[in-house]
Amino acid sequence: MEKFIIEGGHPLHGEVTPAGNKNAALPLLAACLLTDEPVILRNVPDILDVRTMRALLESLGVEIKPLDTHTWQVQAKVIRPADLDPDLTRKIRASILLAGPMTARMGELRLPPPGGDVIGRRRVDTHILALTKLGARVTYDRYFYFSASGLTGADILLDEASVTATENAIMACVTARGKSVIRNAASEPHIQELCHFLNTLGAKIENIGSNTLHITGVEKLHGGEFTIGPDYLEVVSFIGAAAVTKGEIWIRNAGNQYLDMIRLVFGRLGVHWETHGDDIFVPSKQKLEIEPDLGNAIPEISVMPWPSFPTDLMSIALVVATQSKGTVLFHDWMYPSRMFFTDKLVGMGAQIVLCDPHRCIVQGPTELYGEKMESPDIRAGMALVLAALSAKGTSVIRNIGQIDRGYEKVDQKLAALGAKIQRAIE
Ligand SMILES: CC(=O)N[C@H]1[C@@H](OP(=O)(O)OP(=O)(O)OC[C@H]2O[C@@H](n3ccc(=O)[nH]c3=O)[C@H](O)[C@@H]2O)O[C@H](CO)[C@@H](O)[C@@H]1O
Ligand SMILES: C=C(OP(=O)(O)O)C(=O)O
View 1 (spheres, rainbow, N blue to C red):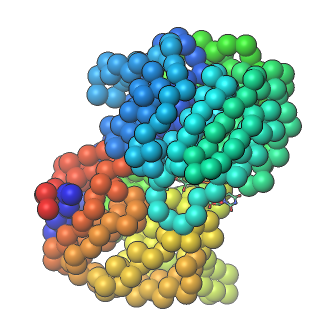
View 2: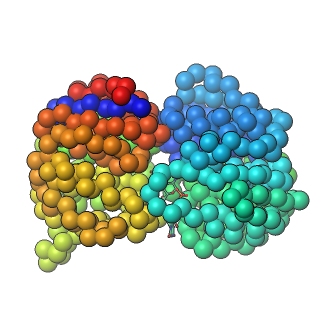
């Protein structure tokens, strides 16, 4: 196991470029199963989850040739519905994304339970609803078994706007016979990217970015090239890191088109940034002050499906709030375990009342002090890094494999910005 040792109190300065979006890279890699021709993917992030997805795809017979660190040639020329290693599927939530393309192309997949962040129950019912609607049979007895003799387009109403279920439904629809409509579809940036990627391979997906997708099935997809967009979660993590250390940074190729709602919410915490083309400048002279609602009411930051504020950024926003003057209520109804890491912030000196598993009140600003902590999940882990960067003294964060799942070389990027951070083996 590895850990980070962080000496806090050093403002970040300089510039940083985000890696490709983890939650786009994973479905795009899975979608390569839909064609037997070569696909070139650029800006593939070098992170643990992507390595796990690579191992899963290779076990199905997919050939993956890195052309350089971030460019892969992927070819699913001859694939087999092999038994997948449960130790691998358990590592990532995105292993469920093999179900749509494998059922579409091979007519079967035996899938051990998917894993991912331990942040509460993670339903797969919506995936089953979508695939069943297209004519697949799904059985579950500790393992999932998906089978089909050809899929037929359908009008699918998702029972919730699940991100990965929408992705599975899209991948299953693009080569299904006839037309499909996916209603109550999620529309996160990675879903939009998956649609654009599939269209470059010959798919016919319309209304991209909306919650009603229209898909006309095509017989076959061909090869192509695609560049994965920047990870907006990493971009905002760096904005947060600059704000809590009172630093001043540039973020290059930040993917500004996806940051509107996030800018609104961070603005309410007193964090502002300038956009220069696709770059971001976070100035050091920020008055971190929480903006109350009308009538001086305590504001609430609540997560919602896209285009609203994403759950994956709540932990980062929460740490920023500990450094802003005022009071704010955070509400994450999606996951029941994402707020428990607040006890670690309280241990560092933050004033937080955890009202229930879904709600907490933060009052700031409070001085934070270095602590020994464990990273419980990817986003809370990164949030603890931010807290440690702004704290007085030295912090130790263990179990950083959680952070490495989704953040590429985060310690090196922070060190280049002037942070005093070291990676060490336990
Ligand atoms: C690999 C990947 O892409 N993972 C992301 C994906 O996970 P994932 O696709 O697993 O998450 P889902 O969108 O399915 O749902 C997240 C949680 O919200 C609940 N829910 C969701 C929508 C809804 O309308 N009603 C509802 O109750 C689900 O039951 C679940 O508990 O999306 C999540 C929500 O943005 C992110 O946290 C994950 O980082
Ligand atoms: C919850 C997350 O990831 P996953 O769905 O892959 O567990 C995340 O990226 O914040």
